[in-house]
Amino acid sequence: MSKTKTLDYWIQPHVLQMKGYTSARDTFQANDQEVVLLDANENPNPWGYNRYPDPYQRRLRKVLAARYGLESDYVMLGNGSDEILDLLFRATCQPGKDQCIALPPTYGMYKVLSNLNQVPIIEVPLDEQFQPRVGETLAATTPNTKLMFLCSPNNPTGNLLNRESVEKLLQNFDGLVVIDEAYVDFASEPSWVDRLDMFPNLVVVQTLSKAYGMAGLRLGMCYANPQLIRVLLKIKPPYNINEATQKLALSRLDQGALLESQRLALIDQRIWLQEQLKDIFWVETVFPSQANFVLVRIDDANMRYKQALDKGFVLRNRHGLPGCQQCLRITVGTQEENKALIQQLKKLT
Ligand SMILES: *Cc1c(COP(=O)(O)O)cnc(C)c1O
Image 1 (spheres, rainbow, N blue to C red):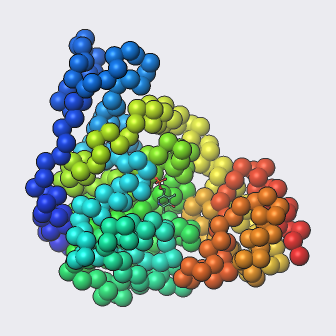
Image 2 (image 1 turned 180 degrees about the vertical axis):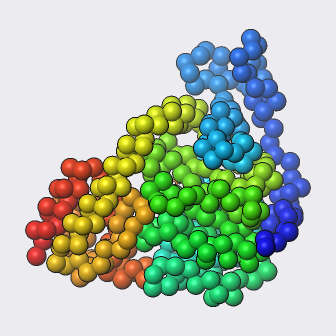
Image 3 (image 1 turned 45 degrees about the vertical axis):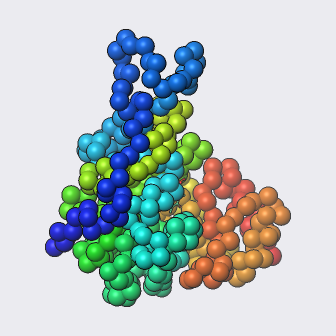
């Protein structure tokens, strides 16, 4: 069973004790009431953006929580999920004392943020199937390991992590387990958000940057138990989600049918791309994918990367990452883009 660790165990004492900034818009929410707002030194002439945005993003959080049948107190929002990951470091890890752990090959930001925050990163490589080595991973942790990053579906490999392995890590690791679900909308298994009440140390991070087509707006979501969410809301920059993003995200999330058809079309295109790539003589392995990209192992990643670039296609060269020797990562584009890419790749000698 999961342990009975509480906030005091995970969150740095000074973070628990500090008071957050109280903004003018905190103390009074305008809503529909007829009031004159003279509290925040704003320019009073309206054009849609002259007022500070809601620091608690009440409408947006309600919609994003409801996707999982949750109340708003289970979710906080970040300026991209990268901001959320950074806040998790600052909430939990004392520089020079604590560590985090990640399982490469995986998303590069965990290491960047560990360096920035002076929190050493323990790395235990995934196995040949890109699955966690549960025993070794747990053995590599110490009482000062505060964060474990699991990315599922994993970037750049594309696979989901085994549910049993993730569950064992959740049960046996004393720190927070952060499951990065940037690609969950393309996957065949449900989100870990459904398990929040079972694992108090579970944090699920998602983003509107991929399936929802809002990378330019910067909106990430963090789902966790309400106690932890309260801490993150306290320490985030007060106005981290701007008014334009809040408005546009609400209208985009309202376009359910369009989003669903785009999601399904991208999955179809991924399957088509995988089949086509298997026909290319210099492609050795097309790895299974539960995301909107495909990892391929080929004869010479550096050479093929340059050849594709010469034809006008920018791919991601992942050669050099542990377990990704001679691998390229290819994002699924539009049907026309994918056709054009395959046409060019098939011509290479
Ligand atoms: C793309 C990606 C993100 C995205 O982060 P945003 O800051 O929300 O755009 C997060 N995690 C992984 C694994 C990704 O691939």
